[in-house]
Image (tube, helix red, strand yellow):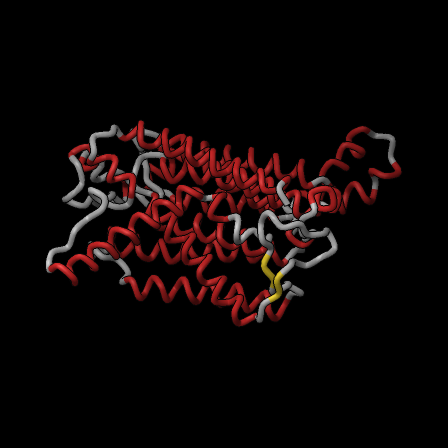
Amino acid sequence: MLYHLLYQLIYRSYGSASESYFYKGLNVFQYVTFRTTWATITALLISLLLGKTVIRKLTELKVGQEIREELSEEHQAKKGTPTMGGVLIIGSVIISTLLWAKLDGIYLWLALGATTAFGAIGFIDDYIKIVKKRSLGLTGRQKLLGQLVTTLAVWAVLYFLTNYGWNLSIPFIKETADTNGISVIPAWVYLIFMGFILLGSSNAVNLTDGLDGLATSVTFIAMAALTALTYVGSDRRWAEYLDITFNPAAGELTVFCGAMVGASLGFLWFNSPPAEVFMGDVGSLAIGGALGTVAVLTKQEFLLPFIGGIFVIEALSVMIQVSFFKFTKRTGGVGKRIFLQSPLHHHFQLAGWKEPKIVFRFVIVAILFALMSLSTLKLR
């Protein structure tokens, strides 16, 4: 919005021919780096300024977190803490992005739409669990159906309204700035691949959201890395220098990613131990959906496991635990566990680690994964 008003309307009309420093100063709005920086700052400030109000409103609505009985006493103490705080993240991201991004790119609207749609699924799930007092919320099939419909909608927009290349960009293999990728596949096959990416990322973030500040901190790190990757892939000079696919249509996604970074950091102010508010499924599913969607739009699908390595580990711990339990029960009659409890952060919690130590160590690993993802830019 500000780009169209201050740069295209005012600067183009008056600034280029004026000697006024005010008008000439508006020229900075054409640069995506400037707008990304301020989108980050704006989302952060919105989160900080509205955080207490949102928490107070959630408290008044008695939207309190329910805690599973088998979790530790340390976890039980969190019962009743306001949840569904993810609406603050989503709202901050949308407002900040609309303020600072160019609004004429379909990729940007796809990212905003997918994030909102995944968030809506989480909102309905939270609402049923907490407000309607139905412990299970949406059934697994209902939640999965909503995620699949959202994925299909993203694919359909790409298929019918864009020149999206149905290709896979593989890390460590050199490309050129003028190629559209290195491995072209049929669009319907890519739909299956896209479903795996979007459903996997949204549910992985959801599983990670179990300790104060954990999912929010990892989101901040992952989105910061994705912001850098999105920027270099949408800038021809960097794309040519690094031998990666040049995708100018994804340029404004940098602003969106920056807004997500700022919103996550602002939410962490209230979600850090001891948490004053939890993001709930409305936040975790929206964040996971945003990560997956941006990865698809920027051809970073194969880097996503590095960008969000902690999310992958948490999801794998649940899959391994459930699979091993079912296998041992079917073969030996008694189900056995590999971890004390899954997701993995609960295993360490039951092993005696204090919650802040788990969060800080997971954050260190998340930073390592993010650095690994950025290192691939020079390993092609």
